[in-house]
Length: 318
Image (cartoon, rainbow, N blue to C red):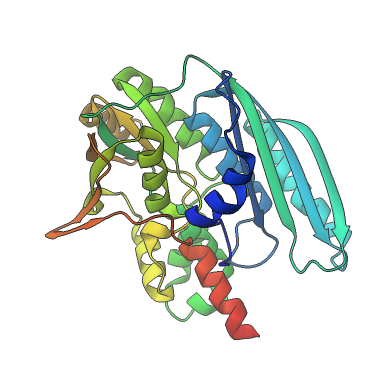
């Protein structure tokens, strides 16, 4: 298996089918993720919490509660564990995420810490239902958090490529909350523009979010890649490392389906949030990506470019 989130086929075979039908919708929103952390070129634990919290916001959750589980390598210092949990606690406090439970264990055979996050909250109103004809609007910039990780952990290597101010600007681009306030504000504003569905970014980048949106809406769409906001720093760092910015880790971004996408994008722009209408939903299951004169279909979930980069470096190191 490749590092990072499982492929859709593996997820279906080994996770979903053994359990059969999931529990019916009961008005609660639940999200979960697990990932390795605690090393260069992978997201820190607090950022994984931010990714999960943004999923909850996009789903319309209120009164979010979280459970955090950590498997810690027995040979690593306890002080590093404390630093991790202090930063995670600061994020939860600032974003009003109530920590319901936390536990950790030490593993003799573990190389890296692994983190599991489960969040649950109350949904206001019924489950969202997207409609053919809705516009697709992106708020935030694709790959910004992944680019920040590449810049921050690659400072020494990038020193001979980019100006220090450029690298530092890219490294700090995700901010202290990894764009959580941006996602919350975008979803709040979208309610006044006929929002029917919202999907936040994370592993898999903007392509992963578009894939999830297609599955949740059970509809097709056409999206213009040239309209997707991407920071210039992200583009240049991705070119240096050979990473695809559209598959790069993207918390701090949300895709919104709305009846008035142009109005929503304009309103978000007035609020200082980078946003653009990138396409629209349509009947059927064709999920089309347009890039100038090139047209192609969106593939099934692919490995995130950040995890692919980390995995290649690990293999080359050994």
